[in-house]
Length: 496
Image 1 (cartoon, one colour):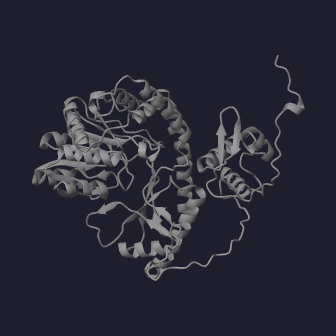
Image 2 (cartoon, rainbow, N blue to C red):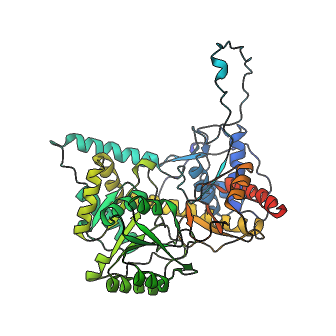
Image 3 (cartoon, helix red, strand yellow):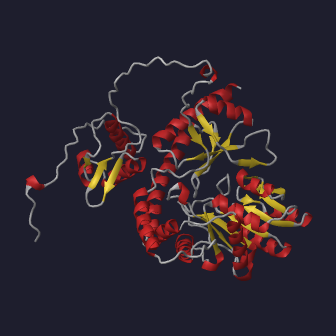
Protein backbone atom coordinates (compact mmCIF):
# COMPACT_ATOMS: atom_id res chain seq x y z
CA UNK A 1 0.00 0.00 0.00
CA UNK A 2 1.37 3.41 -0.97
CA UNK A 3 2.00 5.78 1.96
CA UNK A 4 -0.28 8.80 2.03
CA UNK A 5 1.23 12.18 1.29
CA UNK A 6 1.14 14.69 4.09
CA UNK A 7 -1.09 17.68 3.32
CA UNK A 8 1.80 20.12 3.59
CA UNK A 9 3.72 18.16 0.91
CA UNK A 10 0.97 18.29 -1.68
CA UNK A 11 1.27 20.90 -4.41
CA UNK A 12 -1.65 23.30 -4.19
CA UNK A 13 -2.68 26.07 -6.55
CA UNK A 14 -4.11 29.47 -5.89
CA UNK A 15 -4.34 31.22 -9.23
CA UNK A 16 -5.78 34.30 -7.60
CA UNK A 17 -7.91 34.96 -10.69
CA UNK A 18 -11.63 34.94 -11.18
CA UNK A 19 -13.09 33.31 -14.25
CA UNK A 20 -16.02 35.16 -15.77
CA UNK A 21 -19.24 33.19 -16.30
CA UNK A 22 -19.06 31.20 -19.50
CA UNK A 23 -21.31 32.22 -22.38
CA UNK A 24 -23.09 30.11 -25.02
CA UNK A 25 -21.99 30.35 -28.64
CA UNK A 26 -18.24 29.86 -28.22
CA UNK A 27 -16.57 26.58 -27.33
CA UNK A 28 -15.98 26.29 -23.60
CA UNK A 29 -12.30 25.37 -23.94
CA UNK A 30 -11.69 28.51 -26.01
CA UNK A 31 -13.40 30.72 -23.43
CA UNK A 32 -11.16 29.26 -20.74
CA UNK A 33 -8.06 29.75 -22.94
CA UNK A 34 -9.08 33.33 -23.74
CA UNK A 35 -9.51 34.20 -20.06
CA UNK A 36 -6.13 32.70 -19.16
CA UNK A 37 -4.49 34.72 -21.96
CA UNK A 38 -6.20 37.84 -20.62
CA UNK A 39 -4.76 37.23 -17.14
CA UNK A 40 -1.28 36.64 -18.56
CA UNK A 41 -1.39 39.85 -20.57
CA UNK A 42 -2.61 41.76 -17.51
CA UNK A 43 0.37 40.45 -15.57
CA UNK A 44 -1.75 38.52 -13.07
CA UNK A 45 -0.17 35.25 -14.26
CA UNK A 46 3.56 35.87 -14.45
CA UNK A 47 6.07 33.90 -16.58
CA UNK A 48 7.12 30.59 -14.98
CA UNK A 49 3.89 30.44 -12.94
CA UNK A 50 2.98 26.80 -12.35
CA UNK A 51 -0.45 26.03 -13.76
CA UNK A 52 -2.82 23.52 -12.17
CA UNK A 53 -3.01 20.06 -13.66
CA UNK A 54 -5.92 19.38 -15.99
CA UNK A 55 -7.83 17.45 -13.32
CA UNK A 56 -7.35 20.17 -10.70
CA UNK A 57 -8.42 23.02 -12.97
CA UNK A 58 -11.37 20.97 -14.26
CA UNK A 59 -12.50 20.46 -10.65
CA UNK A 60 -12.02 24.16 -9.86
CA UNK A 61 -14.19 25.20 -12.85
CA UNK A 62 -16.58 22.25 -12.68
CA UNK A 63 -15.94 21.23 -16.28
CA UNK A 64 -14.83 18.05 -18.01
CA UNK A 65 -11.08 17.33 -17.85
CA UNK A 66 -10.95 16.96 -21.66
CA UNK A 67 -12.08 20.58 -21.93
CA UNK A 68 -9.03 21.71 -19.92
CA UNK A 69 -6.73 19.46 -21.99
CA UNK A 70 -7.99 21.19 -25.15
CA UNK A 71 -7.52 24.61 -23.55
CA UNK A 72 -3.95 23.80 -22.55
CA UNK A 73 -3.17 22.36 -25.99
CA UNK A 74 -4.37 25.60 -27.63
CA UNK A 75 -2.40 27.78 -25.19
CA UNK A 76 0.75 25.70 -25.68
CA UNK A 77 0.34 25.87 -29.47
CA UNK A 78 0.01 29.66 -29.29
CA UNK A 79 3.04 29.98 -27.02
CA UNK A 80 1.33 31.20 -23.85
CA UNK A 81 2.10 28.03 -21.89
CA UNK A 82 4.91 25.49 -21.96
CA UNK A 83 5.02 21.97 -20.64
CA UNK A 84 7.92 20.11 -19.06
CA UNK A 85 8.00 16.35 -18.76
CA UNK A 86 7.08 15.20 -15.24
CA UNK A 87 7.18 18.79 -13.97
CA UNK A 88 3.95 20.26 -15.22
CA UNK A 89 2.61 23.18 -17.21
CA UNK A 90 3.98 26.72 -16.84
CA UNK A 91 3.30 30.20 -18.13
CA UNK A 92 5.83 30.71 -20.91
CA UNK A 93 8.88 32.91 -20.40
CA UNK A 94 8.79 33.91 -24.08
CA UNK A 95 5.23 35.11 -24.58
CA UNK A 96 3.83 35.49 -28.11
CA UNK A 97 2.74 39.03 -27.19
CA UNK A 98 4.24 41.12 -24.38
CA UNK A 99 2.44 41.19 -21.05
CA UNK A 100 1.10 44.58 -20.07
CA UNK A 101 3.79 46.61 -18.33
CA UNK A 102 4.24 50.28 -17.56
CA UNK A 103 6.86 51.79 -19.80
CA UNK A 104 9.08 54.73 -18.90
CA UNK A 105 8.44 57.78 -21.00
CA UNK A 106 11.67 58.90 -22.64
CA UNK A 107 11.74 62.37 -24.20
CA UNK A 108 12.39 62.28 -27.91
CA UNK A 109 15.79 63.83 -28.65
CA UNK A 110 16.18 66.46 -31.31
CA UNK A 111 18.30 65.01 -34.07
CA UNK A 112 20.40 67.08 -36.44
CA UNK A 113 20.54 65.97 -40.07
CA UNK A 114 22.86 67.03 -42.83
CA UNK A 115 21.37 68.74 -45.85
CA UNK A 116 21.77 65.49 -47.80
CA UNK A 117 19.82 63.55 -45.19
CA UNK A 118 16.65 65.50 -45.83
CA UNK A 119 16.21 63.65 -49.13
CA UNK A 120 15.88 60.26 -47.38
CA UNK A 121 12.21 59.44 -46.74
CA UNK A 122 11.35 58.44 -43.19
CA UNK A 123 10.66 54.79 -42.42
CA UNK A 124 6.96 54.41 -41.83
CA UNK A 125 5.70 51.77 -39.40
CA UNK A 126 4.44 48.65 -41.16
CA UNK A 127 0.68 48.24 -41.13
CA UNK A 128 -0.59 45.24 -39.22
CA UNK A 129 -2.04 42.83 -41.78
CA UNK A 130 -3.74 39.47 -41.48
CA UNK A 131 -2.84 36.89 -44.11
CA UNK A 132 -5.59 35.52 -46.37
CA UNK A 133 -3.94 32.70 -48.29
CA UNK A 134 -3.61 28.95 -48.55
CA UNK A 135 -3.02 27.00 -45.36
CA UNK A 136 0.37 27.52 -43.76
CA UNK A 137 1.76 25.61 -40.78
CA UNK A 138 1.64 27.48 -37.48
CA UNK A 139 5.17 27.86 -36.15
CA UNK A 140 3.71 27.89 -32.64
CA UNK A 141 2.78 24.22 -33.16
CA UNK A 142 6.30 23.19 -34.24
CA UNK A 143 8.15 21.48 -31.35
CA UNK A 144 11.51 23.18 -31.82
CA UNK A 145 12.86 21.68 -28.59
CA UNK A 146 12.40 18.11 -29.84
CA UNK A 147 14.03 18.90 -33.18
CA UNK A 148 16.97 20.66 -31.49
CA UNK A 149 17.61 17.69 -29.19
CA UNK A 150 17.49 15.26 -32.11
CA UNK A 151 19.83 17.55 -34.08
CA UNK A 152 22.37 17.60 -31.24
CA UNK A 153 22.45 13.81 -31.14
CA UNK A 154 22.74 13.69 -34.93
CA UNK A 155 25.59 16.22 -34.89
CA UNK A 156 27.52 14.10 -32.40
CA UNK A 157 26.94 11.04 -34.57
CA UNK A 158 28.17 12.80 -37.70
CA UNK A 159 31.20 14.18 -35.85
CA UNK A 160 32.20 10.65 -34.74
CA UNK A 161 32.13 9.37 -38.31
CA UNK A 162 35.64 8.66 -39.58
CA UNK A 163 35.00 10.05 -43.06
CA UNK A 164 32.43 12.01 -44.99
CA UNK A 165 29.89 9.99 -46.98
CA UNK A 166 29.59 10.51 -50.72
CA UNK A 167 26.63 12.85 -51.33
CA UNK A 168 23.46 11.00 -52.29
CA UNK A 169 21.31 13.43 -54.23
CA UNK A 170 18.26 11.24 -53.72
CA UNK A 171 18.65 11.57 -49.94
CA UNK A 172 20.55 9.26 -47.60
CA UNK A 173 19.40 5.65 -47.94
CA UNK A 174 18.43 5.36 -44.28
CA UNK A 175 16.52 8.65 -44.57
CA UNK A 176 14.61 7.37 -47.60
CA UNK A 177 13.84 4.13 -45.75
CA UNK A 178 12.36 6.11 -42.87
CA UNK A 179 10.26 8.29 -45.21
CA UNK A 180 9.07 5.23 -47.16
CA UNK A 181 8.00 3.62 -43.90
CA UNK A 182 6.15 6.78 -42.86
CA UNK A 183 4.33 7.02 -46.20
CA UNK A 184 3.25 3.39 -45.85
CA UNK A 185 2.01 3.79 -42.28
CA UNK A 186 0.28 7.15 -42.74
CA UNK A 187 -1.04 6.98 -46.31
CA UNK A 188 -0.99 3.32 -47.35
CA UNK A 189 1.58 4.28 -49.98
CA UNK A 190 3.88 1.32 -50.70
CA UNK A 191 7.05 2.71 -52.23
CA UNK A 192 10.56 1.29 -52.29
CA UNK A 193 13.71 3.17 -51.35
CA UNK A 194 14.91 2.99 -54.95
CA UNK A 195 11.71 4.72 -56.06
CA UNK A 196 12.15 7.84 -53.90
CA UNK A 197 13.96 11.13 -54.36
CA UNK A 198 13.72 13.48 -51.39
CA UNK A 199 13.68 17.26 -51.75
CA UNK A 200 13.23 20.40 -49.65
CA UNK A 201 9.48 20.69 -50.04
CA UNK A 202 6.56 20.32 -52.42
CA UNK A 203 7.45 23.20 -54.75
CA UNK A 204 10.99 21.91 -55.23
CA UNK A 205 9.59 18.44 -55.97
CA UNK A 206 7.43 19.98 -58.70
CA UNK A 207 10.38 21.89 -60.15
CA UNK A 208 12.80 18.96 -60.19
CA UNK A 209 10.31 16.46 -61.64
CA UNK A 210 9.30 18.95 -64.35
CA UNK A 211 12.94 19.52 -65.34
CA UNK A 212 13.50 15.77 -65.49
CA UNK A 213 10.44 15.18 -67.68
CA UNK A 214 9.61 18.23 -69.82
CA UNK A 215 11.34 19.58 -72.93
CA UNK A 216 10.55 22.88 -74.69
CA UNK A 217 7.45 22.52 -76.87
CA UNK A 218 5.89 19.64 -74.88
CA UNK A 219 2.16 19.86 -74.22
CA UNK A 220 1.08 19.72 -70.58
CA UNK A 221 -2.51 19.70 -69.29
CA UNK A 222 -3.45 21.58 -66.13
CA UNK A 223 -6.77 21.79 -64.32
CA UNK A 224 -8.68 24.95 -65.25
CA UNK A 225 -8.17 26.29 -61.74
CA UNK A 226 -4.71 25.32 -60.56
CA UNK A 227 -1.74 26.46 -58.43
CA UNK A 228 -0.05 29.32 -60.27
CA UNK A 229 3.42 28.54 -58.87
CA UNK A 230 3.30 25.02 -60.35
CA UNK A 231 2.02 26.37 -63.66
CA UNK A 232 4.87 28.89 -63.78
CA UNK A 233 7.44 26.09 -63.50
CA UNK A 234 6.18 24.36 -66.66
CA UNK A 235 5.80 27.65 -68.54
CA UNK A 236 9.42 28.53 -67.68
CA UNK A 237 10.54 25.25 -69.29
CA UNK A 238 8.84 26.16 -72.57
CA UNK A 239 5.83 23.86 -72.26
CA UNK A 240 2.57 24.53 -74.09
CA UNK A 241 -0.19 24.64 -71.48
CA UNK A 242 -3.67 23.23 -72.09
CA UNK A 243 -6.54 23.42 -69.60
CA UNK A 244 -9.09 20.74 -68.75
CA UNK A 245 -12.34 21.71 -67.07
CA UNK A 246 -13.17 20.78 -63.48
CA UNK A 247 -16.43 20.04 -61.67
CA UNK A 248 -17.50 19.11 -58.15
CA UNK A 249 -15.42 15.91 -58.36
CA UNK A 250 -12.21 17.41 -59.76
CA UNK A 251 -10.70 17.33 -63.24
CA UNK A 252 -13.06 16.01 -65.92
CA UNK A 253 -11.55 12.92 -67.53
CA UNK A 254 -13.60 13.40 -70.71
CA UNK A 255 -11.98 16.81 -71.24
CA UNK A 256 -8.56 15.25 -70.75
CA UNK A 257 -9.29 12.63 -73.40
CA UNK A 258 -10.41 15.24 -75.94
CA UNK A 259 -7.26 17.31 -75.40
CA UNK A 260 -4.99 14.27 -75.64
CA UNK A 261 -6.56 13.13 -78.92
CA UNK A 262 -6.00 16.58 -80.46
CA UNK A 263 -2.49 17.27 -79.11
CA UNK A 264 0.63 15.16 -78.42
CA UNK A 265 0.34 15.59 -74.64
CA UNK A 266 3.44 14.74 -72.59
CA UNK A 267 1.88 15.02 -69.12
CA UNK A 268 -1.11 16.10 -67.06
CA UNK A 269 -0.65 17.86 -63.72
CA UNK A 270 -3.42 16.99 -61.25
CA UNK A 271 -3.96 17.76 -57.58
CA UNK A 272 -5.54 14.44 -56.71
CA UNK A 273 -5.87 14.18 -52.90
CA UNK A 274 -6.99 17.80 -52.37
CA UNK A 275 -7.85 19.66 -55.55
CA UNK A 276 -6.19 23.08 -55.49
CA UNK A 277 -8.12 25.25 -54.82
CA UNK A 278 -11.56 23.60 -54.47
CA UNK A 279 -10.43 20.93 -51.90
CA UNK A 280 -12.35 18.05 -53.54
CA UNK A 281 -10.71 14.63 -53.82
CA UNK A 282 -10.48 13.03 -57.26
CA UNK A 283 -12.64 9.86 -57.19
CA UNK A 284 -10.98 6.48 -57.69
CA UNK A 285 -13.06 5.92 -60.85
CA UNK A 286 -11.59 9.04 -62.49
CA UNK A 287 -8.09 8.14 -61.35
CA UNK A 288 -8.41 4.75 -63.02
CA UNK A 289 -9.79 6.33 -66.17
CA UNK A 290 -6.87 8.80 -66.33
CA UNK A 291 -4.44 5.93 -65.83
CA UNK A 292 -6.05 3.98 -68.67
CA UNK A 293 -5.86 7.04 -70.95
CA UNK A 294 -2.21 7.58 -70.01
CA UNK A 295 -1.35 4.05 -71.05
CA UNK A 296 -3.38 4.24 -74.27
CA UNK A 297 -2.24 7.73 -75.34
CA UNK A 298 1.29 7.61 -73.92
CA UNK A 299 1.42 10.47 -71.40
CA UNK A 300 2.45 10.82 -67.75
CA UNK A 301 0.32 11.81 -64.77
CA UNK A 302 2.00 14.15 -62.31
CA UNK A 303 -0.07 13.63 -59.17
CA UNK A 304 0.71 16.41 -56.71
CA UNK A 305 -0.53 16.13 -53.12
CA UNK A 306 -1.54 19.40 -51.40
CA UNK A 307 -3.08 17.69 -48.37
CA UNK A 308 -0.06 18.12 -46.03
CA UNK A 309 -0.97 14.50 -45.08
CA UNK A 310 -3.71 15.85 -42.82
CA UNK A 311 -6.98 13.94 -43.17
CA UNK A 312 -9.93 14.56 -40.88
CA UNK A 313 -13.01 12.65 -42.04
CA UNK A 314 -11.43 10.18 -44.42
CA UNK A 315 -8.16 8.35 -44.99
CA UNK A 316 -5.81 9.15 -47.83
CA UNK A 317 -6.77 7.50 -51.11
CA UNK A 318 -4.11 4.89 -51.81
CA UNK A 319 -2.42 4.90 -55.26
CA UNK A 320 -4.42 3.03 -57.91
CA UNK A 321 -1.46 2.17 -60.18
CA UNK A 322 0.00 -1.33 -59.88
CA UNK A 323 2.75 -3.24 -61.63
CA UNK A 324 4.08 -1.76 -64.85
CA UNK A 325 1.43 0.99 -64.78
CA UNK A 326 3.28 2.74 -61.93
CA UNK A 327 5.71 4.27 -64.39
CA UNK A 328 2.84 6.39 -65.75
CA UNK A 329 2.26 8.24 -62.47
CA UNK A 330 4.84 10.53 -60.88
CA UNK A 331 3.76 11.05 -57.29
CA UNK A 332 4.77 14.33 -55.67
CA UNK A 333 4.13 15.42 -52.11
CA UNK A 334 5.59 16.55 -48.81
CA UNK A 335 5.67 15.33 -45.25
CA UNK A 336 3.51 17.21 -42.73
CA UNK A 337 4.92 20.69 -42.04
CA UNK A 338 5.73 20.08 -38.39
CA UNK A 339 9.44 20.87 -38.69
CA UNK A 340 11.22 24.25 -38.97
CA UNK A 341 10.58 25.96 -42.31
CA UNK A 342 14.09 25.30 -43.64
CA UNK A 343 13.80 21.58 -42.81
CA UNK A 344 10.70 20.66 -44.82
CA UNK A 345 10.80 17.35 -46.68
CA UNK A 346 9.28 16.78 -50.11
CA UNK A 347 9.37 13.62 -52.18
CA UNK A 348 9.13 12.34 -55.75
CA UNK A 349 8.12 8.72 -56.35
CA UNK A 350 8.44 6.87 -59.66
CA UNK A 351 10.66 4.32 -61.39
CA UNK A 352 14.35 4.05 -60.43
CA UNK A 353 15.28 5.38 -63.88
CA UNK A 354 13.22 8.55 -63.43
CA UNK A 355 14.45 8.96 -59.86
CA UNK A 356 18.02 8.90 -61.19
CA UNK A 357 17.10 11.78 -63.52
CA UNK A 358 15.67 13.73 -60.60
CA UNK A 359 18.83 13.13 -58.58
CA UNK A 360 20.87 14.45 -61.49
CA UNK A 361 18.77 17.63 -61.51
CA UNK A 362 19.42 18.10 -57.80
CA UNK A 363 23.14 17.64 -58.43
CA UNK A 364 23.09 20.29 -61.15
CA UNK A 365 21.34 22.63 -58.68
CA UNK A 366 24.09 22.00 -56.12
CA UNK A 367 21.55 20.53 -53.70
CA UNK A 368 23.72 18.74 -51.14
CA UNK A 369 21.57 17.86 -48.14
CA UNK A 370 22.66 18.43 -44.57
CA UNK A 371 23.50 15.01 -43.03
CA UNK A 372 22.72 16.33 -39.54
CA UNK A 373 19.21 17.38 -40.54
CA UNK A 374 18.52 14.11 -42.35
CA UNK A 375 19.79 12.08 -39.41
CA UNK A 376 17.69 14.09 -36.93
CA UNK A 377 14.47 13.68 -38.95
CA UNK A 378 15.23 9.97 -39.43
CA UNK A 379 15.48 9.57 -35.66
CA UNK A 380 12.17 11.38 -35.11
CA UNK A 381 10.46 9.07 -37.60
CA UNK A 382 12.04 5.83 -36.33
CA UNK A 383 11.24 6.54 -32.67
CA UNK A 384 7.61 7.40 -33.46
CA UNK A 385 8.10 10.99 -32.28
CA UNK A 386 7.28 12.37 -35.74
CA UNK A 387 3.96 10.51 -35.72
CA UNK A 388 3.09 11.80 -32.25
CA UNK A 389 3.94 15.40 -33.21
CA UNK A 390 1.87 15.11 -36.39
CA UNK A 391 -1.13 13.72 -34.48
CA UNK A 392 -0.98 16.53 -31.95
CA UNK A 393 -0.76 19.14 -34.72
CA UNK A 394 -3.65 17.44 -36.50
CA UNK A 395 -5.84 17.71 -33.39
CA UNK A 396 -5.09 21.42 -33.05
CA UNK A 397 -5.72 22.09 -36.74
CA UNK A 398 -8.94 20.09 -36.72
CA UNK A 399 -10.30 22.21 -33.87
CA UNK A 400 -9.42 25.36 -35.82
CA UNK A 401 -11.04 23.90 -38.95
CA UNK A 402 -14.32 23.24 -37.14
CA UNK A 403 -14.46 26.67 -35.52
CA UNK A 404 -13.58 28.41 -38.79
CA UNK A 405 -16.51 26.62 -40.43
CA UNK A 406 -18.83 27.77 -37.64
CA UNK A 407 -17.67 31.39 -37.93
CA UNK A 408 -18.04 31.37 -41.72
CA UNK A 409 -21.60 30.10 -41.40
CA UNK A 410 -22.51 32.62 -38.72
CA UNK A 411 -20.79 35.70 -40.17
CA UNK A 412 -20.38 35.35 -43.95
CA UNK A 413 -23.26 33.14 -45.11
CA UNK A 414 -24.60 35.89 -47.39
CA UNK A 415 -21.17 36.50 -48.97
CA UNK A 416 -19.57 33.07 -49.49
CA UNK A 417 -20.46 29.39 -49.65
CA UNK A 418 -18.10 26.52 -48.86
CA UNK A 419 -17.81 22.81 -48.35
CA UNK A 420 -16.08 21.45 -45.29
CA UNK A 421 -12.54 20.42 -46.33
CA UNK A 422 -11.84 16.78 -45.42
CA UNK A 423 -8.10 17.21 -45.75
CA UNK A 424 -5.48 19.92 -46.08
CA UNK A 425 -5.14 23.29 -44.37
CA UNK A 426 -7.47 25.61 -46.30
CA UNK A 427 -11.09 26.32 -47.16
CA UNK A 428 -12.32 27.22 -50.62
CA UNK A 429 -14.83 30.06 -50.35
CA UNK A 430 -17.06 30.46 -53.40
CA UNK A 431 -18.06 34.12 -53.76
CA UNK A 432 -21.77 34.85 -54.16
CA UNK A 433 -21.18 38.04 -56.16
CA UNK A 434 -19.02 39.07 -59.13
CA UNK A 435 -15.86 40.86 -58.00
CA UNK A 436 -12.93 41.90 -60.19
CA UNK A 437 -9.39 41.03 -59.07
CA UNK A 438 -8.37 44.70 -58.80
CA UNK A 439 -11.39 45.64 -56.70
CA UNK A 440 -10.75 42.72 -54.39
CA UNK A 441 -7.08 43.65 -53.98
CA UNK A 442 -7.90 47.31 -53.23
CA UNK A 443 -10.57 46.55 -50.63
CA UNK A 444 -8.46 43.85 -48.99
CA UNK A 445 -5.57 46.23 -48.45
CA UNK A 446 -7.83 48.91 -47.00
CA UNK A 447 -9.33 46.34 -44.62
CA UNK A 448 -5.88 45.31 -43.37
CA UNK A 449 -5.75 41.98 -45.21
CA UNK A 450 -2.64 40.69 -46.94
CA UNK A 451 -4.14 38.89 -49.93
CA UNK A 452 -2.00 36.03 -51.29
CA UNK A 453 -3.95 33.82 -53.70
CA UNK A 454 -1.62 31.62 -55.77
CA UNK A 455 -4.32 30.44 -58.16
CA UNK A 456 -4.50 30.56 -61.95
CA UNK A 457 -8.07 30.94 -63.23
CA UNK A 458 -8.15 29.92 -66.88
CA UNK A 459 -11.16 31.57 -68.53
CA UNK A 460 -12.10 33.61 -65.44
CA UNK A 461 -9.72 36.56 -65.74
CA UNK A 462 -12.49 39.15 -65.33
CA UNK A 463 -13.82 37.89 -62.01
CA UNK A 464 -12.65 36.12 -58.87
CA UNK A 465 -14.64 32.90 -58.44
CA UNK A 466 -13.49 32.30 -54.88
CA UNK A 467 -10.92 32.73 -52.13
CA UNK A 468 -8.47 30.43 -50.40
CA UNK A 469 -8.84 30.75 -46.64
CA UNK A 470 -6.03 29.05 -44.75
CA UNK A 471 -7.07 28.31 -41.18
CA UNK A 472 -4.02 26.56 -39.73
CA UNK A 473 -1.74 29.56 -39.10
CA UNK A 474 -4.40 31.57 -37.24
CA UNK A 475 -5.66 30.83 -33.76
CA UNK A 476 -9.35 31.26 -32.95
CA UNK A 477 -8.95 34.91 -31.96
CA UNK A 478 -6.96 35.83 -35.07
CA UNK A 479 -9.45 34.00 -37.31
CA UNK A 480 -12.33 35.92 -35.75
CA UNK A 481 -10.45 39.15 -36.48
CA UNK A 482 -9.80 38.11 -40.09
CA UNK A 483 -13.45 37.22 -40.68
CA UNK A 484 -14.49 40.59 -39.27
CA UNK A 485 -12.17 42.25 -41.77
CA UNK A 486 -13.71 40.21 -44.60
CA UNK A 487 -17.12 41.45 -43.42
CA UNK A 488 -15.78 45.01 -43.80
CA UNK A 489 -14.85 44.21 -47.40
CA UNK A 490 -18.29 42.74 -48.05
CA UNK A 491 -19.95 46.06 -47.16
CA UNK A 492 -17.92 47.83 -49.87
CA UNK A 493 -18.79 45.17 -52.47
CA UNK A 494 -22.47 45.48 -51.63
CA UNK A 495 -22.30 49.24 -52.18
CA UNK A 496 -20.60 48.75 -55.51
